[in-house]
Length: 510
Image (tube, rainbow, N blue to C red; front, top):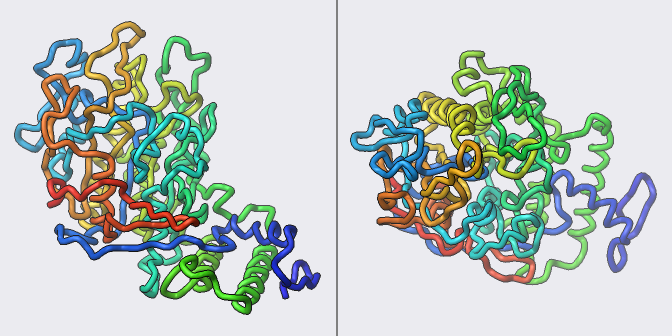
């Protein structure tokens, strides 16, 4: 029997619709009524550094930075390509970066830069960049729960942590969520709907990232997106107050108006439901999870959800106020800087996969790094200074704490920007371009001080060693100890390769 608020109800052919809806409220704790998805892994690859990384921090620069004004400057190109911002040498002989990235130039010996990223979709395809999905349409990007989506890399890592056939053992920091994203749900602070990408798709919402929110306000008005911008915004990515804090979003934390007794009651209801389930017929073949079985997985979900809501571990890790002021200022008193600092604290506390978005704020059109207009003012006054504080500080901080060798850091985006500068809008602009662009990796088995691939003299085409976003996924899974050719299956038993058609790229490995 399942006792709902003291009223006995008997299970016959199944739960009533009302009972299912009542128990469905448990999914807010990350607990589903069933776990239909299986996985199959082939034999491990022989490429070096399998499982070298114990954690991953994915930094996603939404809107897409220009390769010319970051990691692939073209000082010898014509002015219409080279642009107004110059370049400077880095600590790696022969490797130049944008002159507005002096701190980044000093840590280039700790990272690998890929200058030959490429794919065929010059759109804001977050979902394409961070999942194995083989094709992309703008329509899919605006529908995060569309059934055609494939699961986010962080969701796959979270899901496969309880691999069938292996008894799951809680890692260091077992009270910590395995998959958490900062500073808030993607695009949720802009004037459009939330975009697709960082969601678990058919693996189930319990494997979505645990989202935070941020309480701090902006202290500076960000440079305008364009002349047509109707409002100005005090953007926290431009500067934020010291008392700003990261908190769990309302979907991942116990609300103030829910007493602990109500949470305990929900836990009791779940226990009763599982007892009734155990007494019922077994799951159909091929539908349950192997190893410890569906009931054990439910037990794990329940235990982790309850720990999350009642334990202080995750709240303490998110509390950047525990850091010395000098440490916080080293990352930059901006939302991106403080997010990177929180990511280091989360990894140190035991979280497996942390995502940091440099997201839009206020309006969606041309937000973040999407510099269709006012390109130079936004880069000079807002984007590059904030990045050049936070990213090198994160790499140095991880290294000094002995965490870099076991923490994979990815700094990526959807695509790059056009080699030809558009001089028509005020402040000029570069537009979407996916035929060649750059990204950076560090730690967790990645090579140090290396440049992989190159673009042509204009920074518009791959000259050698093309690398796809799916290759980055495959290489990341490999370093995290997951065979990149693993398949997960949906409720219809259709197999999906977790890295799509990507392959591990040895050029990226140390």
